[in-house]
Image 1 (tube, rainbow, N blue to C red):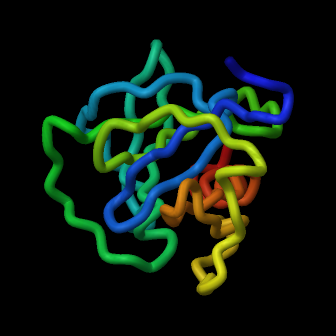
Image 2: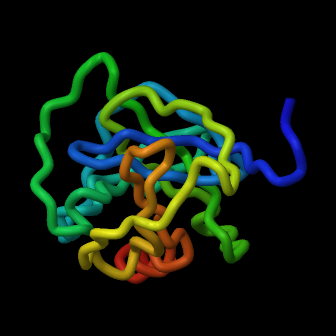
Length: 154
C-alpha cells in the first residue's frame, strides 16, 4: 500500500551509477534501438530515436558527467523516454540510455538519505543520494533539456 508520504519512483541503471526519477517523469521504457546519428553533435548526444512517431534526442548521462561509457549494448539495454519540463512542443521528450532494465521503487523519508561523499558531476546532476543504502543520482531534467535544446536548436 502506498501512503501519501511515498513517491513512486524508478531507478534507471547507468554504467557505474543509477538515476532516481519520479515515475511520473518517465513516459515509457522501451527496448534499445540504434539512434539516427546527428552531424556535429557532442559525444553525449547519441542521436535521435523514433518513439511513437516522434524523433526523440538520445543522451548518455555518463558522457555528460565526464564518465567513460562502453558503447556495447546488450539485450538488457533500454531507453527511458522522459518528459521535458518546459512544455516545448518541438522537444517534449528526451531519451536516456539505460544499461539495463529500470526498476520501480517507493521512496519515503525512511529509505532515502543524502550522499555523504558527494562529488562534482556537473549541472545535470541535481542531488546525490542513497536509496536503501545504494548510491543514486537525481538528474536535473530542466538543465538536461536546456543542454539538449542548445544543440538541436528547438
